[in-house]
Length: 298
Image 1 (cartoon, rainbow, N blue to C red):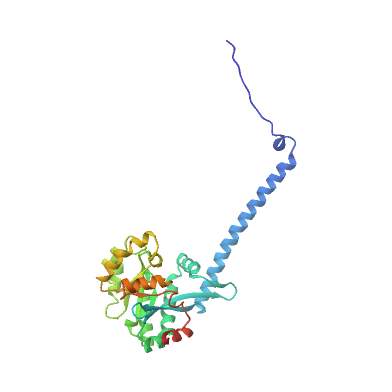
Image 2 (cartoon, rainbow, N blue to C red; image 1 turned 180 degrees about the horizontal axis):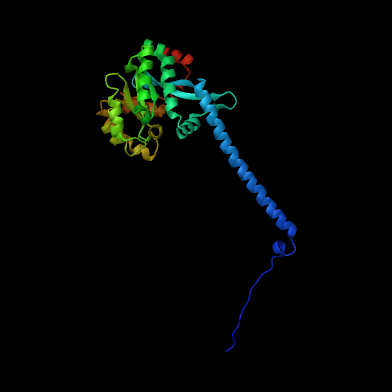
């Protein structure tokens, strides 16, 4: 019997046979690509650091400003309150959205300073409107703010300085922010007697919302825009609506639908939950204080 050995091979003269120039070119290209990637990374880090420095300066120099979105009673379209929204326009970069600078602030430990900034300056700015109109001012805060003694002192001292009653303020909290419900509950109890009300924001976006609703003493529930968007659609969220409607009918709390933008959404809410409130572009966009009085008078 004969043993047969088969050897198979190939030749790649383009890469390995007397082709020094190609190897040098390949090596050079690899270095250039590596340098470009490194430069992009360094530039991105530098940009974030530059943006963070600009945000710190904006806080110190009071360059962050506010716009206000009215909240309407669905039944008669009467304005019951306004929500303050923070905006930042950098002198060189231009408009920087909250979806950029708020996560940046959270990541770098600035979010508590921003909350103190909003509480102090928004209340001071809105004091004349709050004292002359029967409306409330809603302020978005983190659970850490609710549990912060510094935040509570700043809020109460600002209200006292501006002669604004606590009943004019609603603090909006959301379950996405991590804190134990027991800690939040104890901290909310410290606000009792001040008249300040709490709202559960972004309701409908998290599994534990119902749990939070049963554990925390909130006077208002804000329905997330994703639920509002499902009205009149085949979205999965649309199947949640009937249950929410029945629940809200028997609940002695203020219900506010966020992000109402269409005539269909407005008439659906008016027909099914006439006692609820709503905010969104269907009524008006968020406006600066200079335009707010005109909106309130209209």
